[in-house]
Image (tube, rainbow, N blue to C red):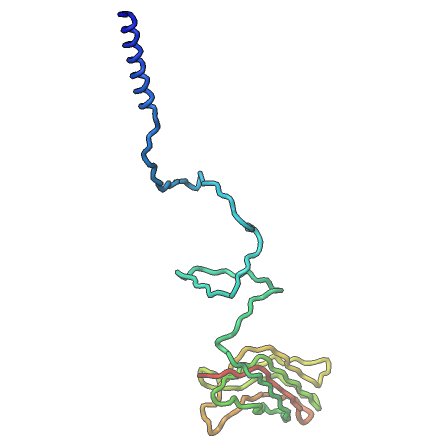
Length: 224
């Protein structure tokens, strides 16, 4: 009997110890709350991502509805255009160019230097002369050593611009065909209203005169 009692005590002790071990190994029933996870990566060690949907890395980008684009901080913008695809521009300094072309025919007697008016510049305008032409036909041994344009300059006064007179294959004919960039304002004396003039000198010992046809072309711009 004594031996049986000892076995029962040992058995109960083993049962109690096993039960405590099972209770200690049981999982905790406390709730786990959600927390944000922040992943910090450098450009040398980026987080790999996958692009969802359709995407193109290279190619043209289409912008719809023509939105307004504002550029801050005054950056430098470079436009890459070729001669076959130029960038369209507008001259804001001369918004209303008005074509101008006048010609005149007159006679210059031998031994004279004659200035002949061709056209006045309208009030409130400035004339930009881009081309001048002249032909002088002689009836003797005359020469045309000098020809010029006389006009009113924007700075004031009447400067005379000498033209390049060339003798043609015909010894009795002289010609001017010259590209220019000169400016003329209206005559400040509105009563006189002197026009732009061609001045031609004819020299020689025989013959009587030279028949001259001269003209200018360019455009008028408004002067504020």
